[in-house]
Structure formats: C-alpha cells, structure tokens
Length: 355
Ligand code: P6P
Image (cartoon, rainbow, N blue to C red; front, top):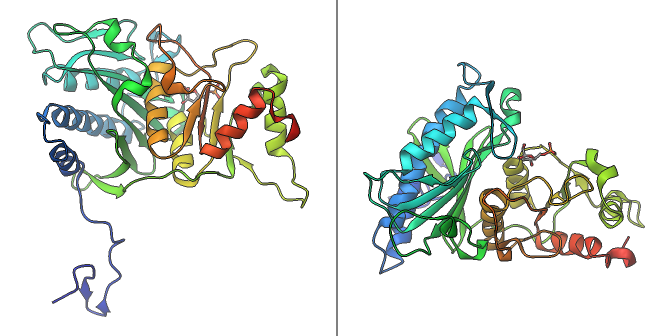
C-alpha cells in the first residue's frame, strides 16, 4: 500500500505532489466555519458567493484581449479615473452575485459614487462589503497583472438597509479581507482573522485549490516598490529614505532592488511571498497620496498584518485610521515589518542616523 504522502508510479515512488493537500476554497471556507461553533453559515455563504463572482471576472479578464471589453467607457469613477469596460463589468458582476444572498446590508465600491443598496426585494444581512472590483485597470490592455480587493465588516447599525456608518469603519474592525491577482495564474488570497491563505484557480476544473497555506511575509525583504517618477514631489525625509535604499553599503553591496509593476495587488503579492515594501506616499500635489483607504489600503493592511507584516501611512497604523469618506485617500507604506518600521523612522525625521 503506498505511503499516504507518496504516489507509486511506473518508475517507483513519485515525489509527493508538493505535499499540499487537495483543498478547495469552498471546503476551506466550510472548515473555517466549523471552527466557530456559533457560526450560522452566513459568512461562509458570503465568501462562496464572492468566489463565484471572482470566477466570472476571471473568465472575462482571461479573454479580455479577444473580445470588445478592453478600452474605456465614456465615464469616470469617483476617483476621477477613467472607467475601463472591465472595471464596469467586474463592478456589476460583484453586485449581481452579492446583492440577493441575504448576507449583506450594503456595499461600497471604487466604481460607484455612493453606497450600493441591497434591493428592497432581497433580505438584508449582517455584513458589509467594500471593494475595488479591478485595481490597476490602466494595465489591462498591456496584459499586466491586475487585481481585485475586498473588505468585509459586520454591520454596526441594528437592522434594515445599511448606512454610511456601516461602511466607514476602521480597518481593525474588519471581519475578513481578500485580494485576487489575475496574472500568469489567478490567485485568491484571504484572511478571516486567522492565517492568510492563497488559492490558485485551476481553470480545467473551475476550482480554487489551496496553494499557499499560512502565508507569512518575511520580516525584511530586498525589494522596494515606489514610483520614482514622483521623486521631485516628495518631501526631504522621504527622498532621503529612497536615496538610502539605493545606496551601496560599506561592503559595496546594494541591499535593495527596485521592482514596480504599477499594479498594487501584483506588487503587494510579490512582497507577501518574498518580502519587501510598497510605498505610495503623499506629496506636494497629492498630500494624501493616490490610494483609497476603505476599499484598497485597509483590506490589504488587514491581510499583511495577519501575515506578520506592517502597514501605515508613515505615522499611523492603517487599520487605526477612522474613515470619514468612502473614497478618501491615504498614503500607504506596507510590507515586511522591519522595512516598514525603517521607512517610518525616515518619514518621521528619525532616519538621519541611518541615511
Ligand atoms: P502610479 C493603479 O492605477 C493603481 O491604483 C495601483 O494599482 C498602483 O499601485 C498605482 O495606482 C500606480 O500609480 O501613480 O505609480 O501610476
């Protein structure tokens, strides 16, 4: 009888297939629910509905080059960004997959100016979904990896349709967060308060299979991700930090290298696996930076912190920031704990002894 971990092939024992048990996202969600005795299945149902929406978005992303879905609509979103057709498709797909399950009381999206209400004909649930349906959409026609970002809160209002109060919660109140990277493969990474787990879509069976169990971000990395085209707009402290990263150390080695994809989820995912830091600071023209707190930075900060990393605006922990507007921006410094800590020291003017 073959050892459980080894398959016997014609030439003898095969190497165990990565020793990764075959676990679908659906089964992982169900097992997570069983760890919470009081669970009603509501949360699991929400995550399962979300997984369906993501597969439908993947299907369009994977053939975006073949059908008339690349290109732009003639609209702009709340951020003023041009809405690409795929943004619109993804936004609608998530809405249609999530609005009738009875799990949500309200939604908020980068692609929708105001709150997204649950239609009167559908039951209202106890959760709130905030999301960026397609992040990095300017990369779509260049076939560069793009992503989706999700945050799930418990509602704070008692009942009925959800309100802005339900959406404007600090990130430390998140019940779960997830991101999807549509790249050479499509990976769904999520956390419900315990570990951070990644699932890779197997298109041949249409299932997300566990591929990255308990992701832990290295304490320090060798990569920094920032748009150095903004160098002249940065303040002196931030410039000194980037100059420090680019300098050679006394042994003539350069401890850091630059990697910038220009797609937040793709840059972040690389740093999650290999360590590193992503930075989008405020500058002279955009004091709050470019990225959105509620549906981009807070969910990603939740995931990175649960993977052992750190996320701040340079001074405050991202998860402690109390949102005042759905679409408000925040500077974002996120990644390996030691790298983010060092960046904060420079940003706060304490890095002079280092730089
Ligand atoms: P910049 C994409 O438009 C995005 O929102 C993020 O995905 C990405 O990290 C950032 O903007 C890139 O912005 O100003 O460097 O092009």
